Length: 566
Image (cartoon, rainbow, N blue to C red; front, side, top):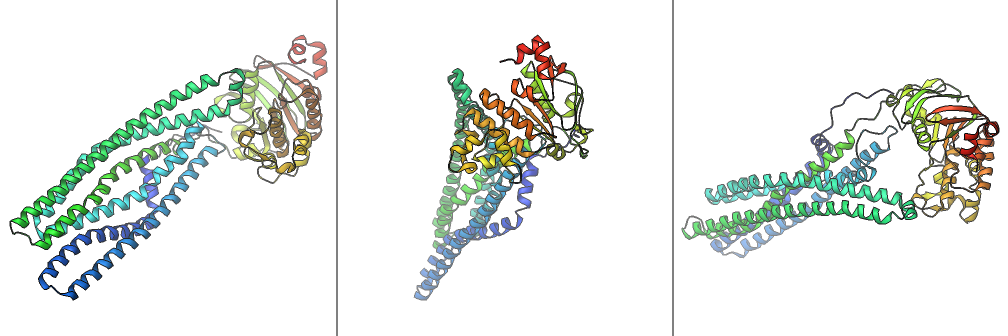
């Protein structure tokens, strides 16, 4: 695995353009229908003005009936165009939001982590709220265009009555948009900061829930609550700031729109009083002045939503544009399961060197827990190969040369704190549903008593993070999952710290029996697991300082005896 090439970040504008481009069809139809809706709305006061003018001139029941029919057509057009236009746009919006949610989630779930300084809770917020707000651009653009259509139609109609009325609408709209564009930029920056603070609060909650049990154990829950309250208060204050900016924006837009509508009404009244327009044109002008406030409101609000969508897209770009921590190779390991650690220096590890032959069961007794964690991280490829000195070889191939899929298929590292997912015992043991060794794994991990406790057996429901299981049951469930994977090389990190001594003895014998002929490494201080290993490596101060069987080391190494004897 090599250091990745520097890539040009994918800016927010690219994300928005992608969303617009792949929804062209829906947006075109939505724009046509919403434009028809706005044109119909605009035509209503125009038709009223014409009806008043012609009815007063001809005083005919036929003309009145024709006018009523025309109004019915306009109302029907307005109703149907709005109904089907919004249906098309909202379907496209929700579909696009789904695509971005899946894309962000896929980035977080890729085998190779991305180099992004965000916690899982923040990525969750990006994959939900920000994805939804980014997809809103699909509705914003058609509504913006349709509102512009309404303003243009109104300006043309008023201009035909008197050019000054038409110019007043055009100039007034341009002035309103100029003022609001300044405020919309402030909304975008404030919203982006609010989203970041809300995401941090969400990440804090996720961390607290993960560590809830230990927090209660040592009485740290009150301090943790105060820490969360501080982060949440910051998010609240920023939300208040955003609400103030939004309120100022909405109030300014409403006031300016009302001023323009009032100016059109007063100008039309003055022109009618002066005899420059007739009564029908006055009715039309007054109706349009009242109607135009709605499309003007929509038209003036759209820049705000554009800035919000852009702010959300910029947050999504943090995840989507982040380069992978490392670029994996493309090779596959050869047949066999030997594991070689060659002069690895990382964290607390100092020129660590040892070899595990194919089919061998080796236990590693690490005197310092940090060294055990560093070794497990290196073997799990949680640390990029270029971040440490030395080499790790699997079946003769360096990890940097192998594809991530090949590493995961050949080498499995089961952490001591393996996650338990909501579902059933079975889906936790065999998530893909393809394992052929589930019964053997259940028996070897001593999970049989948990299965026997419940009428549903392996189909017993498990809550999120295994909340309805004890610590020992969760640990055995995680071990069963690792054994059911039946990988060529299996590394277990402290797999029995939460079980009693008798169960630990049984698990040790069962694991040794089940893994016979397969390469197995157990990082542990458990005497039971150390005893069943073919040999034990002592890891002290980051290097192997002794190597022998467990019983020989007990007999001849006082430090070892002190470290592992219980």
